[in-house]
Each structure stands twice: as C-alpha cells, then as structure tokens.
Amino acid sequence: MKKKPFIVAIDGPAGSGKSTTAKLVAKELGVTFLDSGAMYRTVALAVLKSGEGFDDPDKILKILFSSKIDFKFEDSRLSILLNGEDVTDGIRVPAVNQVVPIVAAMPEIRRQMVPVQRKIGKKISIVAEGRDIGTVVFPKADLKIFLTASIDTRAQRRFLELKSKNHDIALEAIKKEIELRDLKDTQRKISPLIKAVDAIELDTSSLTIAEQVDFIVQKARERIS
Ligand code: DC
Image (cartoon, rainbow, N blue to C red; front, side, top):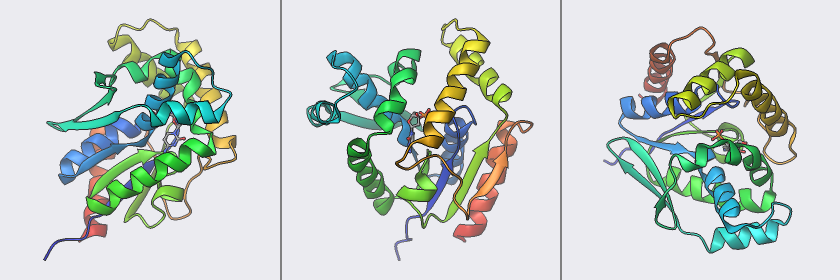
C-alpha cells in the first residue's frame, strides 16, 4: 500500500537557520525540501530584472505570469531557474533582501504561491520552510517547528554566510536589515510570521546544526510512525 505523504513545517524569522536545517532534515528523512521563501525571492528578482517598480500588484502579477520559474532537485541540492537562468545565488543578494518583503506582503502574490506549495505537499512528502507553512499553507502538517534564535546570533550567521559568498557587508548593517525584515514579516496583514499554537518552539542560539537537525528528525519519526 502506498504511504500517505507527510509534511514537516518549519517556520521562523530570517536567519534562524530554517533553510540549512530544513534541507538536512529532508535529506535525513529522504524527502523533498520545499523552500517557500525562494519562491517569493524569485518573483522579487523577476520584478527587479524587469525594471518595473514594486507599487502595483497587477504589474507584478503580470511579470509572474510571464515568467518561467522552475525548481530543480539534484543530489539534494535545490536550484531555481528563472526563464532558464540559474538564479539560486542571485535571489539571495542584498538587493533582493530589501524588496522581497514587499512582494511577500501582497495578497495577490500569496494567492498564487500558496496553491503551488499545497499541490506539492499533496503529492509527495516534504519538509517545507517559510513563515506561514504551519499556520496557513499546511495547518494540518504532521509536525510543526518554530525555529528562533537571538538577533545577534542570526546577524552573525548571515554575516558569515554572505562573507563566504564574497559579499562584504558590516555586521551592524545586517542586524538592522534583519530587524527591519522581522518587523515587516510579523506586522503584515496577510499571513504574518507567528508561531502556530501547536508548533514546537526551538531556540537554536546555542545549538549546533547537527543538534537541531537530530531533534527535528527524531520528532518527525515519532509523529510519522
Ligand atoms: O526565508 P527567506 O528569507 O528566504 O524569505 C524571503 C522573504 O519571503 C521574507 O521576507 C519572508 C517572506 N516569506 C513569506 O512571507 N512566506 C513564506 N512562506 C516564506 C517567506
């Protein structure tokens, strides 16, 4: 008999370690990793490339409908293609960080993205990460985790990540950017970042990646079995 697909939802603020953790949890469980933030980032990049502004949701929808966005999973690495161009790294640059909250706060855009995410979760088992996965996208997820970490820890992590990609940005500037994004993500009207009542909160400030991955994998195995 075919097993029912299961869903692990990992939500939390910027820099809490969601992507790294979710990717490794998915690998450990042998299922697909769904990076929902990458979807909003790709739309933001498409708008930047088009030269249009960010004030008209209809124009942004038009850009979305005329773009081809593909997700490729190879050797547990997720690549994102925008109109055939690999934008996996291009969606994580500071210029995109700045405008992505505007796109993510548009109901018109979320109305397009959420069904795509649900469709994937209906067909296959996934570990999905974002801001509204456990609250809006998959309220019946088998396991919900809310990852947090102190603002200093999160800024330090982003700083090291950007440095490894040769982006030289001051730690203080990163901290400010994260604080601003937290504010926008938690205070927006549609699907704000909040902990689902039935989510397990995990503060990763003093945990290693391996520790947080082990914790989630163990919880997931308990729930699934
Ligand atoms: O996780 P991230 O930094 O890649 O997310 C990019 C932006 O998209 C961030 O501003 C929050 C937003 N986002 C969202 O609103 N809902 C999601 N499910 C995922 C991300």
